[in-house]
Length: 452
Ligand code: TRP
Image (cartoon, rainbow, N blue to C red; front, side, top):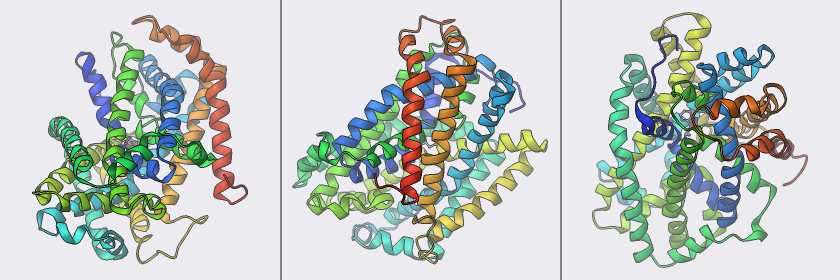
């Protein structure tokens, strides 16, 4: 990002751009399967509680660091304190880990568009269709390569703006379609209301340590926190944008879409399985197994299914572009080479790293790393280890070295910061202590030392 820093036009421009990057597969694919798996209503409650405390604190901190320094993560930390430059570097590794496996899921989405368009809707509604599909070696790899290829071509040719324009009107359409399908499910499918109850009514007996670990990882992932992205966004904002207000708006947007996606998927799982534990806990495949069943039961379902997956594809594509963009610009800055060679290097890297994630379900399904499937392992390393580490270091840096007041002053250049007392308290004490507890317990449980 050597070129002159452009700014967002208008106040809403910033919120829309940041929310556009935040909304992606994390909301539509990841949130519902975690909510289903980790107890429904109790997961939702923990997630919301973490969003208004940590999520808010970290997002405000990152956007403000960006606006204060006018730089993206690596430069920003270095400028504020040379000793903390490594936090920016650590943050920069995260998108590089996420992008390959994100693209594997993007490939699944692309395959499903093709499936509906080519009239395989009823085959896709079968219970075993998805597991058979990802169990084959070649096809998922091709769809993955196609998804990465499209992303790389867009970044290579620099036509991101065009894609963003398309996705700007795709997103509201997606929300309308999600609401329509939710209403359809609730009205027509027997047993769906029990699912709604499971999804919104907290059952404290289902609360475990894993609920917190999963909810916090999801929070970082969904809001694109602890990876430098919001620092970059902040660096583009002007002084007339209220950081506090914008953060609330981005959070409401992102959480709203995640909530609706859960409402779309979780009740349907109940309707089709009667609340069977194994159906609820099936993990990454949940959306791909459940949605085709709803579409199959609908008149015109193939058309609606295709439209739905096309919109999800755009949400995934804009996120993948922004992830690749980040990795490319970091590499350009480090190696001092042109954008185009950087794109090619990253393309090869993503292909190489993504292949094991895809094969982990087929040819290499026997391979596990600390008891996890390969894709789950990458997901774990980024969401449950690196991001909490970056978040913790960010809190320590701001809380004890830079001092919260320095960010508060920056925020108050625009408007009084209403939650400043809470912000200082959260960034110094609440957030670091909780992040540390969650980080330690998730790592210990991954190695089987403790059971949470
Ligand atoms: N937040 C995105 C989602 O919910 C995923 C994501 C994580 C992302 N990090 C990102 C998107 C960085 C763009 C840039 O799907």
